[in-house]
Image (cartoon, rainbow, N blue to C red; front, side):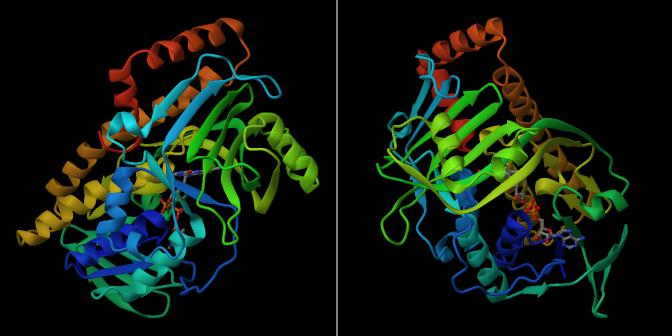
Length: 396
Ligand SMILES: Cc1cc2nc3c(=O)[nH]c(=O)nc-3n(C[C@H](O)[C@H](O)[C@H](O)COP(=O)(O)OP(=O)(O)OC[C@H]3O[C@@H](n4cnc5c(N)ncnc54)[C@H](O)[C@@H]3O)c2cc1C
């Protein structure tokens, strides 16, 4: 094998498909089964995919395999306010027309991405899927030896750790990580609403944390749908999660406002503890760390998966280049280049999302005034606004 990818979540899975499409021999190992799925039911989770990430999904053959329509995001309104009160008149409005008319991003249902990924993983020539399976891996300067719990053994030039936040491979390599927890929980669900969203996303900064409504494609019966990503004080989340549907929808309506008309919750509700993580190294001998194994950020800007997919873009570019040139795809110089390429983006996104959360999750009137003035200033500076948009779209 050229590459063994351990962890077939969205980042590891897409990376494996991209490498296999370029002609590399790739093994994918996941502890969970990756069955081909026909019609998994709606579960209320969706990802905001930026333009750069979409490019990688296309190159990996995954975008064309998505079984459900995607919802373009054409406008984003960022405002500051309190639940039940009108938003501050100072808000940021990002319009796709300011950047040439292409959508600012796309809402992709999590189940749709999973179905597409599992299909492409199983159908890609040169790609061997081992799931469910556990891998024992020993790495040396010469290469990596992989043995699976079903007795399969193979060697690889490069191992990719993409097993999510708790990455065993990262720990085994002695790579340390600094973590901090936020006193907040992320509540995720989907709503159906009477009025159309006009492909407009809303990010509403409330004292307990940001509240986002993201425009999804219409449901099968033509219903208007949006995803909700709602940051709440961790101590309040269990009480909110235990509410009856109507009372839970009323809590959403207080935060959302009435611009979408009557709303109701569809699919399941999910709650996640929120924490951030800084990983001290992204590489080891014959090892590259990607995705949530390589960083953890606050979901304030919905950028966690996009950041991970940018790791996959950087690593696949280097590996495919080395493979085409007949070079070693796990060489120390290549891994050092990968680490250099990703360091600045990872750290700046970690600091930006952490800083945004601290700046916005407060009721301090001085901080509120300062940030409202800042929001107003960005709104009046088209160049700066376009730079923010390009960054959020993964185009910078
Ligand atoms: C509330 C919330 C909302 C979010 N919203 C967004 C959003 O709108 N947009 C966005 O871009 N991101 C969002 N994110 C972040 C996004 O969900 C993650 O960044 C993304 O899932 C990371 O993908 P990954 O492939 O790196 O890891 P994971 O999704 O964690 O996948 C890890 C994979 O590794 C496997 N695995 C684990 N351990 C092992 C092992 N020992 N051996 C083999 N396999 C193993 C698992 O089975 C799994 O398949 C959100 C996160 C939260 C918490």
